[in-house]
Length: 83
Image 1: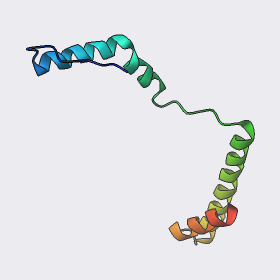
Image 2 (image 1 turned 90 degrees about the vertical axis):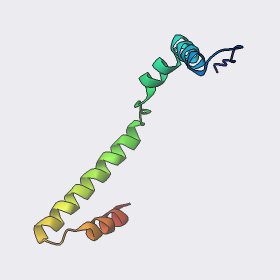
Image 3 (image 1 turned 180 degrees about the horizontal axis):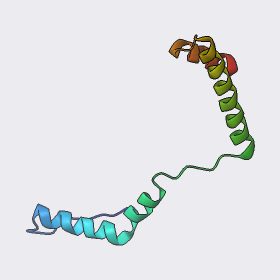
Image 4 (image 1 turned 45 degrees about the horizontal axis):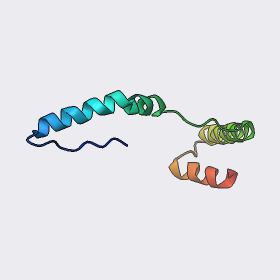
């Protein structure tokens, strides 16, 4: 944690500038930006189950589209039925 105290007769702009410099020097922003969009890697069985679920849903959607009965409500029903 970075703490900055205002010095006597220091302007707000100077305080902000000093704070920004300390944050940059600490490397906090660099580390956060690096990890910003990183996702934890899922286990192999979990990835497999997710892939199979997507395949099942896609198969059912294609079947309903061919029959002309696919809409948002049908998609909700499919997801309820498969899970």
